[in-house]
Length: 438
Image (cartoon, rainbow, N blue to C red; front, side, top):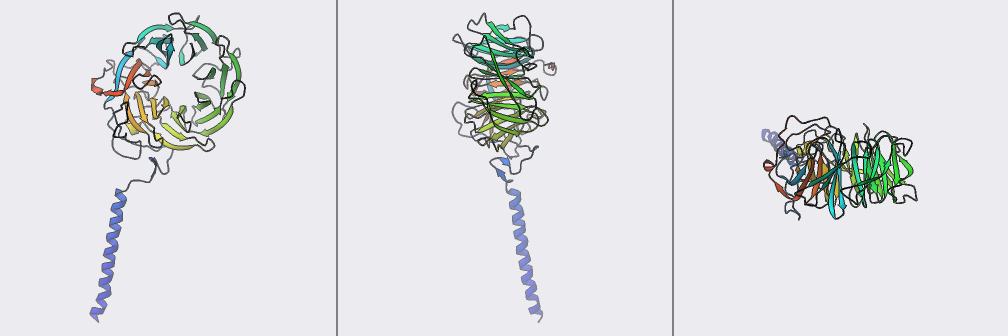
């Protein structure tokens, strides 16, 4: 009888041991399994989620055999800065307070325009036909008065410069003697904008945002000397429009408020037909600017604030935009430095990331962006979380002539087809005494 009573007890003990082993096995598996993700984005992303990455620092003219590490939920500590984009040249005409830049070809020469503010106001006109030996031709200033210039666009033989006192249309057919042919003034005379913060240009249609109201002013520049004001576009949320991008028959408007918005209009019918509202959504706090993918199916949205990120949205259905990835400065060891401007060209995203410099990302898969390389435009001086460092990147001259403007150090010309050790690059001798008045 004792043996009969002992047998069930032994069987029970064996079962309990087996169950305990399975529980332990599942626990180990759980610790080894990655978190649930959807194409590199946390399964339930929130406004504050942080993605980390190991940056891949080699960028060549042909695809690398080792693809860049995506910005994903990996937890490996990044190693930035490593090798950086090769520096071809720098032009620092005034050593003080620069803004946006643009470039184009005039009279067979490649010309870069770099805005200037806080003192030597105007636009620096720089011949970069030889990327290793830029030549500063002049500091252009408006007729009759100085003005801070914050944004620049070109069309044909003309340039549009946007400043605190309006938009200046300048004829550059004679590079050494440019002629101002028109001045679109702020206020009731020519438009309701108070100043110019951002310009966008599609064909000969100019768009102006002043960051102080919901209206986007629109002008037909078919005759550059006689701009024609068209009816303005108004943001549906009645928020201050800050950033504008006009590409592919659309304009993308960003409102830089505690609750930011993105709005997209079809402008392909201008000047004969009114713009058509295509999409409008809450894009997150301090939405600053944006740039669409070449297909128009995705949109990089930049947030200008301490720790500002780049959000990538799937907008193939503008009635239901979907956030599919976020690039954060902390993921790249950028600290709290904020992104400022981006350009999406081909399968690359080019970013002016403030005091962390100019950077390039692989966005061939927009849901899994990967960091390729960068360049510290502060030359080691660092700077504030916002309002310093790389303002914008201009990649349209080719991968071996990428332009970027730095708030304090002027124009840099970079070669993304090769890299150089960070230790071999010039350093800012004024590190620690950076002028933050810009």
